[in-house]
Image 1 (spheres, each protein chain N blue to C red):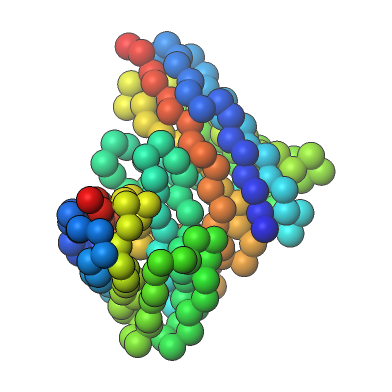
Image 2 (cartoon, rainbow over the protein chains, first blue to last red; image 1 turned 60 degrees about the vertical axis):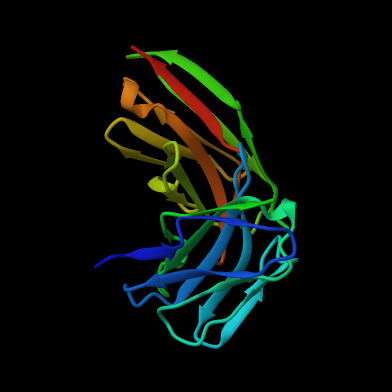
Length: 113
Length: 110
């Protein structure tokens, strides 16, 4: 199993551009999450999903959108990128029966200039 | 919502010493408390966790204690080694949504 994979690893965006961060897991996990980690800080929850077709906001959802059409994929969409969205983005997933035990992807480093 | 405070922000110890990192949480409904280790440029890795019905848990050189009444939990690392150097995060969870502390940079000097 590859676990949780994320693409791209690194991206530079110009202010106002849009992009989609990809996240895929092959563990048949029901729960998936998106976090952002600003320099020197802990992770903050952006959005999460409890299953295909079901998503909900986390602590810092503004400026982002998500969708969950399959169990495996949970893309994060940035519309109109802003410098404040410069961060490292981590995707995570967990089982239905042990949802708190989250497995993290390698992260996507995003720089908005 | 939940708020997690973590102290200290930096901790420097000599190899072989013990290290203790403390966290407090605000939401009494939180029932799961994991600790993550993050090396530079890497993903967070779960190193130990504890549930609210347990007061202490050990795994070799690491242990976690939980005081539900006081709403605080701590990570204890004994016989520290240089490879323990990393950023450590505590978190609290209510039904799967993790709230993280700000992190502790642990440096173990040989």
